Image (cartoon, rainbow, N blue to C red; front, side, top):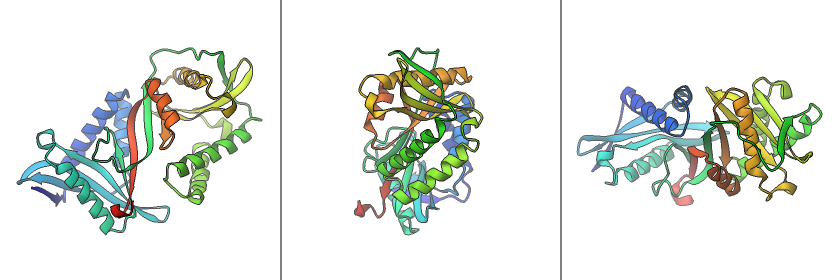
Length: 303
């Protein structure tokens, strides 16, 4: 029988949780310092309620939950759901998921989010994919191929690029089902103001214009040192007229060159749910899933 006991002291859970996160991030190709930073960030930002999962009085695992206000709506989060290997396959995972859903719903949550560092499997198959964080360790400077080159963006090109990127970001958020169009616009304005306070001159950022045979085919934007040793690709865009020509992988190689030139060794991207083309491209290029964000409407019967 699966039972749950809310802990007054979650120290042991936190130690176990961070160890598992660090191991997962390291296995995905991140260095020790980057894995440590990401594990710390996963812990921070929420006041977790942690319940110990027991089986006939014996420890079987943990489940951690929280409810916070997101854009005026209460949203629940499953921060962790872990069942020890010795107790796995006995229904404890599903019982813990159901307990977490009920706990959040009772506190007014209309949505439940989870961030996974392992494959979702059947347990979270009913949760819609909102996004994936992908990463690849770059061992040596690749050649973009297909005649593609990447040059620095000019000040004259920046305003139109910014308008396009903000609109594309809104579209990604809405398509993933994360926010309404109005909420997505506000989030886009806030995020770009925070990320690029000095525009094109913001330090530790690379803005590329991708060209093939002298013709502009796309753009790229990378933030270096996102976490230690990791460049984060905020955008890698091939213009619609040039898609289907094999430029996507070559454009990624240009981003990998910029990553190494900045002194980083890992390139990381987020791909929003619903963008199967990008997911397939990243998979074929060797980018592993570091984290996957999924979401479910509450109550569950409404989905």
